[in-house]
Amino acid sequence: MIAIIRQGVNEKQIDSLITWLESQNLSVHLSKGEFTTILGLVGDTSKIDIELLENLEIVEKVKRISEPFKSANRKFHPNDSIIDVSGVKIGGDNFALIAGPCSVESEAQIIDIAKRVKASGASLLRGGAFKPRTSPYDFQGLQADGLELLKLAKRETGMPIVSEIMNTNHLELFEDVDLIQVGARNMQNFELLKELGKINKPILLKRGLANTMKEWLMSAEYIMAGGNENIILCERGIRTFETYTRNTLDLSAVPMLKELSHLPIIVDPSHASGISRLVKPMALASTACGAHGLMIEVHNDPKNALCDGAQSLTPAEFDDVAKSVEKIREVTAL
Ligand code: PEP
Ligand code: MN
Image 1 (spheres, helix red, strand yellow):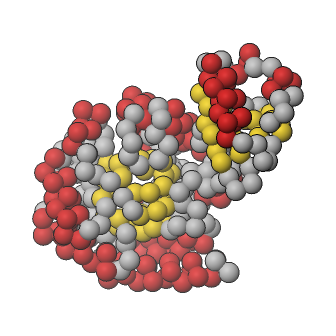
Image 2 (cartoon, rainbow, N blue to C red; image 1 turned 90 degrees about the horizontal axis):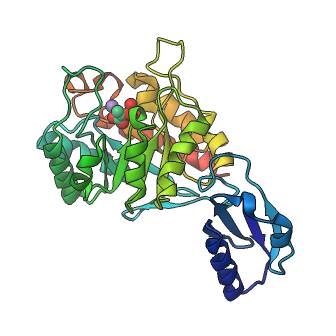
Image 3 (cartoon, rainbow, N blue to C red; image 1 turned 180 degrees about the horizontal axis):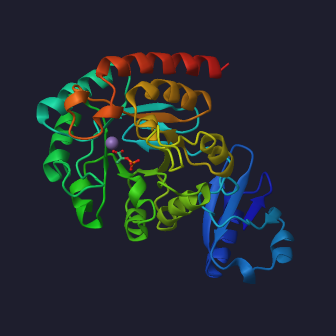
C-alpha cells in the first residue's frame, strides 16, 4: 500500500503519520521526490482503514499495490535509484562498465587485465574467486587467495571490485569487496539473500537461469526486506530451447524492469551469448535499449583461460566495444 502525501506538508506532520503507521506493525518506506512524497507500507495492511487514512489532511491518495514486490516496486519509489559503489554511481543517468576475467587466475593476470580495462573506460573490476562450476572437477577458483589478488588489483588501479559470493560463511572474506555478486545459480538461495539483506553493501543480483522477472524482483525484495536497498539487477540470459548460444539474452527485461522497478539494471552479454564475437553486438543492443551498464568478461589470453575463455574478449576487443558503446550512448541521449 502507498500513501501519497499532499504537497507543502511539513516534516513534523509526516513524521507523526509514520510513527502512527509503525505502531500498527507496518514498516514504512519514505520516498521523497522533487514533487511527490510517498509512504510505502509493508506488512499486513489489511487492517488499515483506507478511508480513514485518505481523510487525513496531509494525505492525498491511498493505493493498494497488487504486485508481490513492494520495496523494489517503482510505485514505492517513483525516481530511479542510484547505487553508489565506492564512488561509482550506477542508475538514473549514470552508466558503468564492469570488466575483468571470469576467474582470477594469478597476480600477473588480474593486474594486467585491470590496468587495461581501466584504460578503456571500465570503472569496476570483476573477477571470480569462488566459481559456481557445473562440474566438481573443473577449476573452482582461487577462493580466498583470489579475493586477495583482486584486492591487490584494486590497490594498484584504484578500481572498486566485484566478486561472486556463494556461501554465507564467506561473508567476512568479502569485507573489502565493493560490490557483491549473487550469481544466476543462487538467485533463489533465500538464506543467502536474507544474510545479504543485513549488510550495508551493494549487491549485484543476476537473473536466475530459468526465472521470471517477477521471481527475480522477489529475490531483490528478500534483500530489501532485510534493510539493504543497494541492489543492481543484472540480465545475463535465460535458458531456452536454443543451443547455438549459451543462453538467450532477454533484452525486453531492461525496459520492462525499468517500468516495474526503480532499481538499476545492467546486462552481461558474455554469459548471455557464450561466444566472444557476439558480445559486441549484444553490448551495443543492451546499451541502446536503456541498460544502466554492462558487465563484460575480458581475459589477456582467452584461449588459455581457466574458465569461460570462449566468451572472453581480449583487452583490445574490449577497448573497441567500449568506444562503440560510448557512441550508442551519445545517440540514445539525443
Ligand atoms: C559469472 O559472472 O562469472 C557467472 C558465473 O555468471 P552467472 O551467474 O550469470 O552464470
Ligand atoms: Mn564466467
